[in-house]
Image (cartoon, rainbow, N blue to C red; front, top):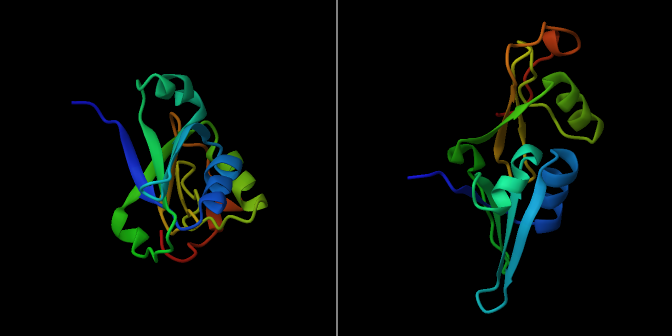
Length: 146
């Protein structure tokens, strides 16, 4: 058995791609438009996994966009996606600078949570040992759900 991908339904594909690719930093691996079924599948991977993912040797995130409008709620019930990052403070600052709310700041220098436009929780974990706690993160409070 091998882990292949996680599928997340998204209401607005362009808004979701902007979040996952431009803000979070994932790379698009493939896109499949299914006219007859009226849906689009977009596969994304972390930059370090992109080449392996293209060869189906690393897991991906699959965004599923149904063309007919649907309301998706309960993103918190899904659980979360998790990505390891080289510097949690740099990533969180970059996200904040682009208007992303840091729902659970990296007070411990190790873990943070943000949410996608569709309410999917995304956990960010520091690679290796936790970084030394530093401001503004150390005293920042949680915002909303994560």
